Length: 362
Image 1: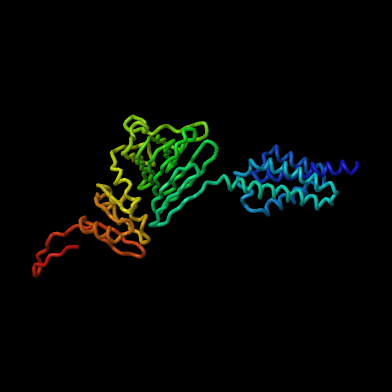
Image 2 (image 1 turned 180 degrees about the horizontal axis):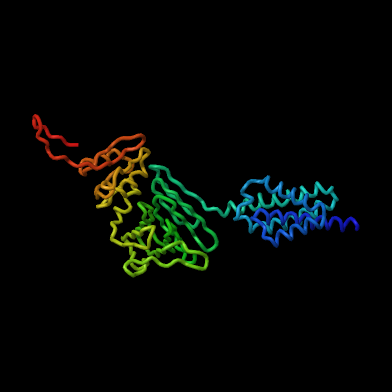
C-alpha cells in the first residue's frame, strides 16, 4: 500500500471516528448501531484509539457544544474537518498528531462556528426589577413597554416575530408587517397581531389582554409545527371579533375559559405613568401588582382577605400608603414579619360587659 493510500485510509478513519463521536454524544446506540461499531473496531487495531481520542477532545470543549440545538450544525462541521485535515495530512504527520488534529478540528468547528450560530438563535431577554419600568425598541421598529418585575423574551427569525412573556406585563406598539405576524405567548395562550397596540399581563393565574387599537387573535396554546392551536372563544365567538379596542380579555391559564369586558384606556394604561388603579378588583390581584414595585413584599394571610374587593388609586412603589388605605376601609390588619407584611382578616368582637363594662376590639 503506497503513502497516498495510507493517508486516504487515515483520512477515512479519522472521519469515521469523528462521526461515531457525534453519534455517541446524541444518546445510547441501538443494537444494530452497536454491532456496526464493534465491526468498525475489529476492522483495524487503531480504530478504538482514534475514537477514544475524539471523545476526549469532544468532552474538553464547553458544554454548549453538546446542546441538542447544535446537532444540525455538525454535518457542516464534519465537512470543514475533512477540508482542514486534507491540508494538514499533506505533510504526512505521525498518526497521533493526525488523530488529535482531526478531533480538534471537529470540536473547534462545532464549539466556535456552531456555538456562535447557536447563541445567535437564542432569544433576546429583557428584564425589569422591582419598581423599574423600561421601554424596548425592537428590531422591526416595534416598541415594548415593560412594567416592573417583568421578563420578556424576543426572537425574530425568517418570517416570524415571536415573543414570550414569562412574567409581569408589557404593552406593545407593533410595527405593521402583514407578512410577519407578531405573536406573544403567555402561560399557554398566544396573542397574534400584525400591526396594533395592546398589552399582555400574566397575573393571578390569568392572562389579561387590553386592546387599544387594531385587532388581535388569541389562541388557546402556542401550537406545534404544522398544527396551529385553536382560536380562544368568548361566548362562542372567536376573540378576533369579540375583543375590540378599549376592551379587555381575561383568560384563565389552566382552562379555555375567557371573558371580554369594556376597559377604560386611561385606567388600563395608568401603570405606565406610575399609578396603580383598581376598580372593584380582588385583593389577591391588587397585592400581586403592588408587589411588582415592592422590595418588602405583601402576603395575604388567609383566603378571606384574598377575596375582598378593592377600588382606589395608588402611587406605584408606595406600599405603605396601600397598606394604610386597605386597613382603614376594609376588615384587614397588617402584621409585620421578617422581610414581609402579612395581611390578615379580623372581625369586631361583641361587647363584653364584665367588671367595669369595658369593651374590646381585636
